[in-house]
Image 1: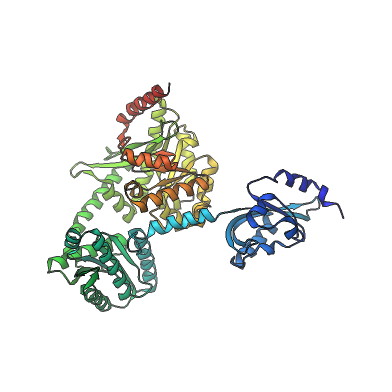
Image 2: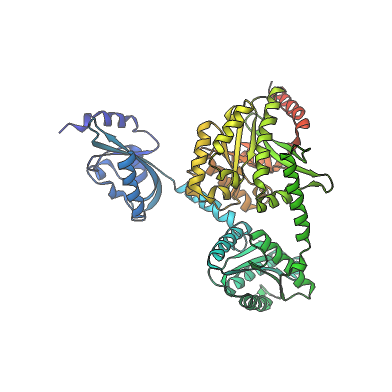
Length: 575
């Protein structure tokens, strides 16, 4: 047997003796033959404690056997594996770690050694867990917030469609809560809301989601129901429970509820519509004397007719693009400021629609309709090609070192030929891959993670910059997030808005920046509107800013002078 102490492998291992990551090496029989100092520091085991031992000595018993099964399959097939496991230190404490294992083979292709490195990811997981909880739960009551509620409602609708069940959505508003707040103060009001949340939970099954939308508005989702009658019975139960007296400190309070009810599938088939219709019914209940509940009726919602009119106008406008008519759409661009240089280094392309009769239509209205009707596909295609065309014009006008970001819809990402389309656009307009950034939302990424990763890998290999937009508003799995081949996270404006006044929003922003940087990603903050927000985010280590503090979205003819003036001013300040 050869003397392993003089093997080239161990000579190389000594070079890593002072590495930050823990390192250990085993022989072909999986007995540990060497560890480095970081290993001892992280695990508490000295070399003499583990040399000759199987790495199982580190196991905590908390890692699924399936993980180890997949690990050995990968090592046999690919000579490499990386993943997350839970291990135990010498003092008995357990901790999560990111583990990487490589196989070393000899000339005969026989296994000689396994080289493993790992790092303690406790802080990263804790930060991610805090961020996840804060992002999806109400800070006062601990109930779900709207973001998480909509995800759970969507899941309930998918299940109900498959099983041919109904779903009930109850929107609850307290009738005289404002009076309590105004007369007795927010302290009393907050304690009242806490009790309302507990009573709502007690009125429904454990698997029925309960959320606080904000203020004194709550939502309950009743899953797997048989009839409207059963929903009515629960609504009546909630009404009676919430109408009972509350005791807060020395005060006896009453806060009767007005409840609106919508039903899937008769009142809508997506979360937004069902919540909107329940809201309409709730206002009808208030108009009928309060302290009661009402089911939604189509006659309550005159907005439905307005929506249909807008949908038809949108469809006609998109057809006009394809028939070479004068476009009703125009691209606006919102600058992105790089903190380190102060210069504008990127632009987000945003669609704007001006109807010849209806006038300018807010994006919040027509984008939602486009997504619900499938029109987002042709609209997204137009935005992509128009953004590439405009970027070429900007370069020809002397604006260089600029990147344009374009949002991709779920439908666009589903197409296997997306990389081919992108490559064609780059060639058509003589653009460099790094001049184009493609953005997807969390919810888009999570609809089919495996397929999404495959498409994004191709785009990344081309040199395209990739970003996850509106981060924190979706329900993404952090285990999938670390596998997404992306370069940037964009922090949603909803968390930036109150960052300097809301402890919860500040915690979410801080945790998101830590998470992004730990994954080697840039962090772009959207919706920066005040110097206080800017300063707070800059102190947290944010990389890029985007928002009205710097510029609103601009049409192309206003954008170029703005960029030239901005960057010239920055260069003058730095001279």
